[in-house]
Image 1: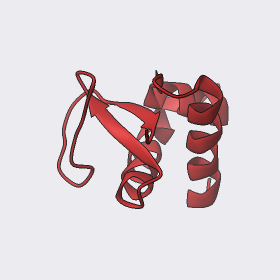
Image 2: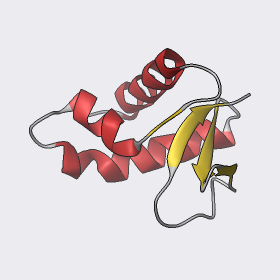
Image 3: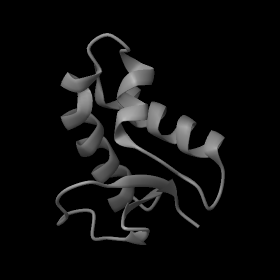
Image 4: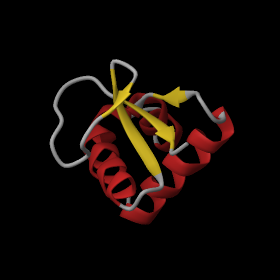
Length: 81
């Protein structure tokens, strides 16, 4: 799975969810490969980091935007407000 495909899936799902709402990384991975989605979680995180650094999305922890180059743990993805 290439980077562009993962980034496009993130943007498509986040935009479909709408402003003020977020998606989980597992939703993106499941949309890309329902049978082997867990193996894609690393690729989803890397793509989310690139998109956040590029200003297209925000990475959220506990509902607050975090530094995309320095976060750990559970996170969600939202279209940048």
